[in-house]
Amino acid sequence: MSKTWTILKYELLNTLSRRSFLLMLILVPLIPGLIVGVLGVMNPGQRESVQEVFTPGFDSPLPFGYVDQGNLIQALPEWLPAGTLEKYTQEDDAKADLLAGKLNAYYIIPKDYLQKGEITIIRQDANPVTSFSQNAMFDEVLKFNLLNADPELYNAYNTPALYQYINLAPQTETRDKESPLALYLPYGITMLFYILIMMTASLLLNNVNKEKENRVMEVLLTSLKPVQLFTGKIIALGLAGLLQLVVWLGSAAVILKLGGSTLRLPEGFQFPPSLILFGVVFFVLGYAIYGSLMAGVGALVPNLKEASQATTMMIIPLIIPLMFFNALLQDPNGSLAVFLSLFPLTAPVAMMTRLATGIAPFWQAGISALLCLVLVFIIVRSVSNLFRAQVLLTGQKFSPKSFITALFAKD
Image 1 (cartoon, rainbow, N blue to C red):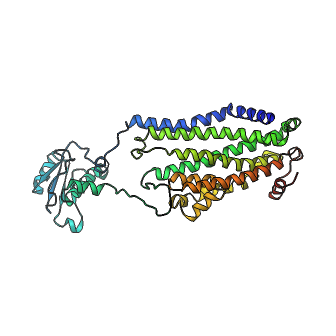
Image 2: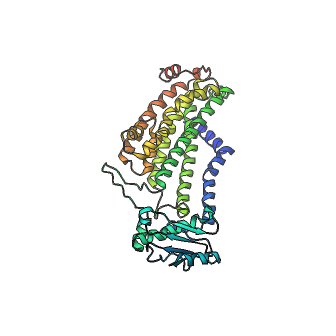
Image 3: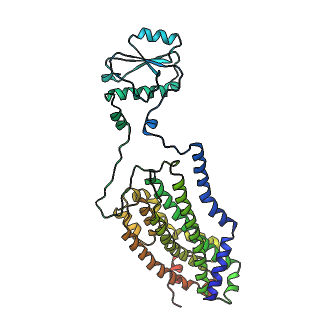
């Protein structure tokens, strides 16, 4: 036990002191934090009102005129600055003021506007780019009057409806599909877990294979049992990966809380604590599965080139949830989503994607974790067979058949 602890402590301190590890640990949360901070300084966190979002305005110092032949405009909305629009009963009067430089342009609303939907704009320059925002504003004035000049009706027309989704299937909570987090949070969690599990597992693979190539393994095996070496390495690198996960998820929670107004998050949004808890559980299980498999590959093959080719087959199950991300997002309780989140090789990523949507039942997460734990027990016990002196000190060309044979070979 003391020798295992010695290996664990050495590998952990060696990993934590690497410059590349520290840079990844700090820069990954620091860069988005700085971006959110800069955006917050440039836009001091004031939430735009619905009226500001849906009501374009004039940017010209001169007023605009209109000749309402259809008698549609009965009142001007309160949000329109005074003197912005001037009403003319005769087109000749509007044209005279335009030529005299008193108007920017004027609009003619024909009697048959409701049938044809056509409006004529008269101006001295014919630049559609400069007139775009003004025309959009005049459209809003027309909408206001077509809705009987009723401010409440106009605001209701311009405000997107808030849909509340109720799923009759058993679930812990519902989500607001209109929120930007409905896409970005699950996507971010999915990519985070894929990258973290792959990074940490690959680190273990490289570590084992490098020590085989430079023959450090031979020296270590003179005083250590192979299983002691394997146990110390997998726990040490797992703790390093767990530290990254906690720091990154914690930083994400802080950024979302402090930058809520900048990121336009819903009022009262809080990063789900359960997501961090399950995140730790499924990272540990995912790393134990794939880290053990990659350590077994590193123990079997003679060099890193062979190991890199072999890992391509190993990571295919981990990529499957990325391929079906849209299906997981659109139907988190569908048959495909449930299967991928319960199948142990895809569960660490797929279940976290479902949990990030806020819909996956916790009892399914518990069953998924239990199935992953069973697979961890089987794989770790099998990979321990590869950490034997006769395997570690020889090395052979990788093939799926030889790998499986070595995994389940008896001592």
